[in-house]
Length: 34
Image 1 (cartoon, helix red, strand yellow):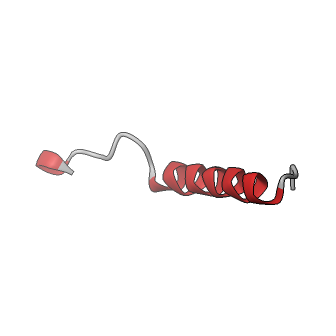
Image 2: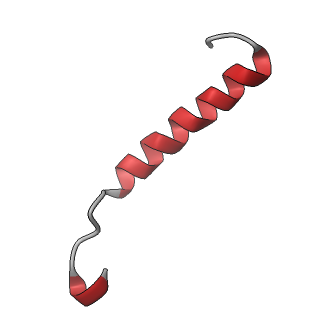
């Protein structure tokens, strides 16, 4: 990004992390390991 260098972590990693975080929240709300 800065000086046309690549982002150190791909956007796919961020998307996968958000899916995992959302799953943790759903699990906490439902009280299950869904």
